[in-house]
Image (cartoon, rainbow, N blue to C red; front, side, top):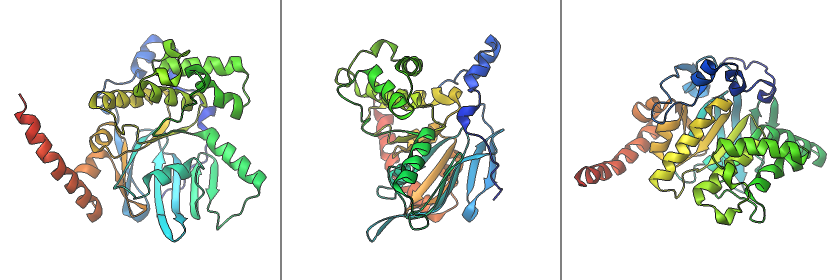
Length: 328
């Protein structure tokens, strides 16, 4: 494995959109690609990682923004994460797939410090976290570590977790003001920028109960973006959504490309993962079994566990496909 180059936090770099605004031509070149064709301008490069697996990197990106090494998480005697090891390149959209109970969501929570893990290491940007069995932290050290990590990593929860007593704008400005100590005027300016990005400028005075499920999800995305993190985590973003809303979520994630964020999605939706991802990581038994491009993982998996899972998925899809063909 190549040594990871030291780099400054992504927020210190100029956003790609700002560079695009220098000229109309550049702006048009950087606009999000249409749904269904957004991968056309990306070329993948294979690089070896631990265990002989692969990661796929966007052309021009040779820096891992996320490195997980031999991470172990236990609940009592139950080992949920078992020496999980993988890398995610800067600017990638990576989907973590796997059967229920394989540790996907727990892995996501460890990446945002919502869960402490026992052994191994997690590095996101310039913040490195070690397991509790390897390094004990004082309460002050724990608070500082959590603050630094969450400044770099935002999360969109499966149930959105919006504050019901706050408006859309109030939900979006709360974290920058509370965590970063921003003045309300500055936080409001940033919040409105991202509410516009997700198409909710006209809803800023609405309360969550007045919004649809899809709109609530977009508020949660804008709230995460308002902290201006390097990485955004999504826990089951298409859970219980109808097909039209799933399409909207896919478009929304791809529209974030021009912000240069690294996105990590945990999902059960195989078609969704295949369509939107730069990289797919297959999880089973608490660790990453295989990683690669959607084409590699879905069509030519190298590990037996991955092949068995993909075969079961194809068998489930076959009857649906036949039924769809017969529908007038």
